[in-house]
Length: 221
Image 1 (cartoon, rainbow, N blue to C red):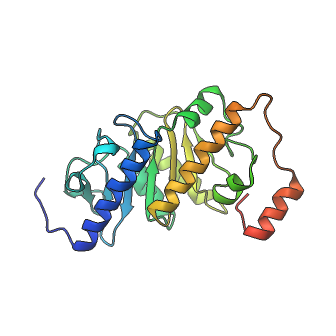
Image 2: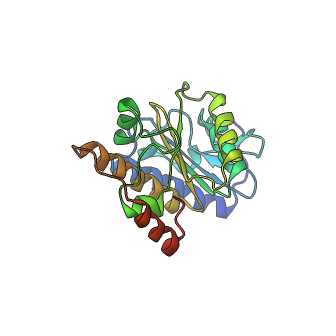
């Protein structure tokens, strides 16, 4: 891939992607070469390379693609590029994260709470920071059909979700910044861990408790 002049602001964003990838890797939220990160630019997107370890990224490795998904520089873009582009097209997100987080993948292997919400509302911060997360049925990694399914889901949603769960593959979270997308991932993974640890399963927050959170914090549940 021929090199292009990289604007200074993009250089900073490349460093941010590497920082986030290293943080996720060191805390066990991603492993091996699983997972990917992208950022929206004024012109196109930055996305991690296919089969790259997020804990050891170098800024120049990142793929720069235009709005149509055509690669401009860097190593070969992640095979999940179509999924990321679908989320950017349907939301105001500036960052998209995909991980294979252990407890969330385990949840899909055991069985999610419902297709509309993989977990019931069991903690206030889950309600405040994440909201309902829909489940998508299994497709092979990189299948462009996943992007189409997400586009349909976002098009039908009265209030777009902050994440989706890919069966057997893991969560995709997004936000107006890398920090926000990472916070959604962290809270979602922690909630799945709590749910799987509790025997018997905890009761969801009741309608009155949810209403209070909605009125006070404008939560999405």
